Length: 314
Image (cartoon, rainbow, N blue to C red; front, side, top):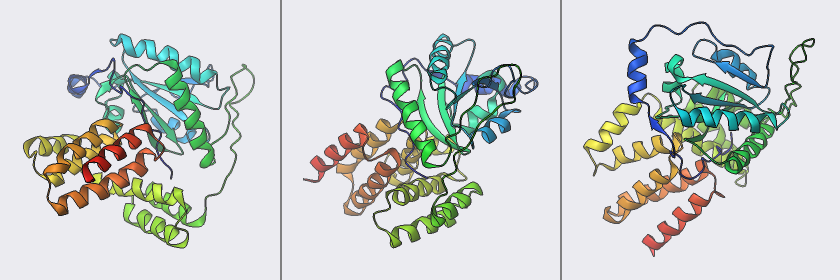
């Protein structure tokens, strides 16, 4: 595990509320057949709930950008064009999987998408939040470069050759074995045993306190463990109903970070901070430090939050 790629600023620019779409899909007919990767185009493919297993498997060889879009959303149609152009420019080192939200309600729920368009990535089967709404090409390009770096760290650095009408899809993975404890943690995450994953990362840190990937991995696993078994609605309802309940606010902060709403998460905690007692402030400081690792310690939003926290402390 390593730091997720942080979403860019203005993460919801051009986005629309998805709640009505989800309700519409619950009453609609079941989606039609899956759109698995096609021999006609291996770089840009269509997918949906039924065909997503093929996309997950592909992400073990090459990072996959997943775009949740809808025909009724002009911003998402425009974004698809930009994503396709920038993915193709990577010469098969990335694949774009476009999922129509109208036919993919399970994906909408799984990725906690609250807006259309929403863009996430998959690396070795693990989701990596990117952004929601429209973004300029230079921001997307920078995120894609970071995604390729992340894939390389996990040995997911294959290449998909464009179809030529004669050859089969070709992707040559570059194997880069993880250190044993990191592999142990990764395997535990695969089976959703977050306690075991956290234990492996803690052991790695004890053996090498400078193991930055283990520190970041532990922070991510702790976040996943705190969110396990909870639903988006219950977390947000609890936080809205009890604005002074620190535990409820910490839950919604975890949810916001997992969904890419980093600025909202940091602002929520830092706004509460002055009104908390000493124990509450200690808990918030510890949670912020952990979330800084999840977002990425070099991220500009982390630097801004650190400065704001320091001003509150001193």
